[in-house]
Structures are given as C-alpha cells and as structure tokens.
Length: 371
Ligand code: UD1
Image (cartoon, rainbow, N blue to C red):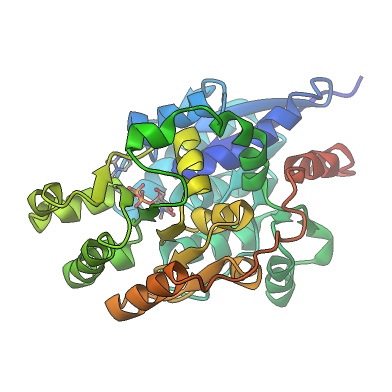
C-alpha cells in the first residue's frame, strides 16, 4: 500500500491565511493521497491579525502554534527556524509548503531544506528588485532553495528562469489568494459592513499602510498623513490601522488630531470578509500592501500603490494599479485624477480564476519523486 504523503502547510502572518486556506481545502479532498498538517508560527498573534481570519476563511485550528511573536528580523527568523526545525524532526513531513514572502516563509523553507525535506513555494518568482524590502530577500532566498515553485503570473516564471531555476521545477498555476476571494465573495452580500462603517457604496476610499519605508520614517509618514487629511475632504477614507502604523501615530501624537477629523476614519485592523466587502464597494484603494493590489485588480477597483516599485507588475498591466511612490504631490495628483474619472479599463490577469489551488494539488498528485 502507498502511504499518504504528510504535507506541512505553514502560516505565519496575516497575508498567509487567505493563501493557505484554498490549498488546505483542496488537499483534504484526497485523504488517501495526502495528510496535511497546518502549522502557525505565530508571527502575527493579535485576534484581529490572526484569529478572525481563521473564522472568516473557515480554517481549522492549527495542528501546532509555535508562538514566535514579534522581534527584529534576525530574532524573529531565528526563532521560527529553531521551533520549526523541531516540528520537522518530529513530524518528518514529505513536503513543506510555504506561501508568500514573510519572515516565516523564508525561515521555514530554510529549516526544512537543511533537513533535506522538499519545499514548495506558492507565489514564487515575484520580484520588486528592491533590496531594501525585507520581503525581496525572503522571496529570493525561498525561491533559490525550493524544489517546487508555483507562480501566480508569467513574469514570475521569467524571473525564475533568469535566475537559473530549472524549468521543470516551475509551475504557473495562477493566484491562490484570488481563489479565496472568489470563493468568499458571495458572503459579502448582506453583511451590513458598509452600514457599520457609515459609508455608501462607491463613495469612500480604503487606505492601508504598513511598509517600513512608509511608516517607520516620521517625515515620510507625516507627509502621507497630511495628504490623507486633505484628500478626506474629497471623500471619506477608511483606514484600518496596522500595528506598525499605530506605533508611529502614537509616537507623533497624531491620534488626537485624527479624532477631530470626521472624514479620515481610523479603525482597528479589519477581518477578511469585512475587508473584502469594503474593498469591493470602494471608489478607490490606496495602499502599500502587495495583496491588496491584486484584490483591487480582480474587484475592478482602481488602486494607488504608495511604493516606488511593485513585485506584481501584472496588476499595472491589467489597468488597475498605479505605482506612485510616497511623495505627497504624486499621491494627491493620482487620487484626484481617479476622482475626476481617469480610470483605465481593468482586465483580469491570466489564471486568476479561482482554480490555482486545484492546479497545485494536481501537480502534487502527479509528482513522480518526493525527494
Ligand atoms: C509582516 C510581513 C509583511 C506583510 C505584513 C502584513 C515580514 C518581513 N513582513 O509585516 O511582508 O505584508 O506582515 O501585516 O515578514 N504586531 C502586533 N500584533 C501582531 C503582529 C505584529 O502588534 O499580531 C506588531 C508588533 O509590534 C511588531 C510589528 O507589529 O513588531 C510588526 O510585525 P511583523 O510581523 O514584524 O511585521 P509586519 O510589519 O506586520
């Protein structure tokens, strides 16, 4: 009898949950072939950064929670590696699947690979070519040591081939995050989310900020903050505040200022379904997140990205995304241009069709060698 393959799926931080959920749901359809285990490193641990995503995405409780928490990059990465190595030694999985580009992704890939356990990277091949981004280092290192590389777009395949990754390891499967979006979107009807946030469909913007390049430097942060106060006179802006931004708001004493401004609305981090509802009905999305650029594209909502580059150029080619950096003048001009009706026609990127996880599992079902 052939034994089912033990597959560890790793989640660590908020953007991982919606990528792993569809893969896990697909794997459990083949109990004779796969025995999946869900490991949460605990990089994100607040209820509104983690637990709510398990509920909204109907993810089962993790088989193990490593409780790593926050720390410097080296500290966090090292702690994940130490704890995850133990898990691998005890569980002896046939494959470790990591997703995205957070510190937990790279740490678990390294720990597994050094134990000669095969690693699969989902969302492989994305490149910003910006080495000041910790995620770029995580992406390049993870891809270099992965045995299976599942890519969301054709540019990712090209990046990997250029870096010398053998063609047979690369599988263009589409975007797993969009699997979650499409499978959950019907739940956004009748949630009452817009009423709860006091906004009307098509008449507000969503803002998210958490990149160190935007929120850790007081001058840059103040510049963005002031332009948002201005723009909120044009239309209400809902701003779910990431803990990293919260720290800077507190440090600069800006919270009081915001409380007096009705139209720039600071709220706690928002769960998956409420955020999907708000994104779907927004007039525009202003963000420095990677995933939100993709969600905006599929939802057909114009997106302004407050970064100098993007590892997701396909969202720009699709007509949804404008990458404008963090200078207040450029941000203001881009927002006003959209409010004046200058938006492109938006097309959906190839294979962002809700079936990426199915394609991944198809590849795993037909793998000849697991070593
Ligand atoms: C991490 C990822 C980033 C991803 C983002 C989504 C890395 C290098 N970065 O950045 O790619 O886009 O998650 O949110 O992995 N904190 C809390 N509660 C939590 C988690 C964090 O208060 O549940 C605070 C801590 O003070 C911590 C800070 O947020 O120091 C940053 O958390 P961390 O996981 O280091 O990085 P993020 O900025 O969230």
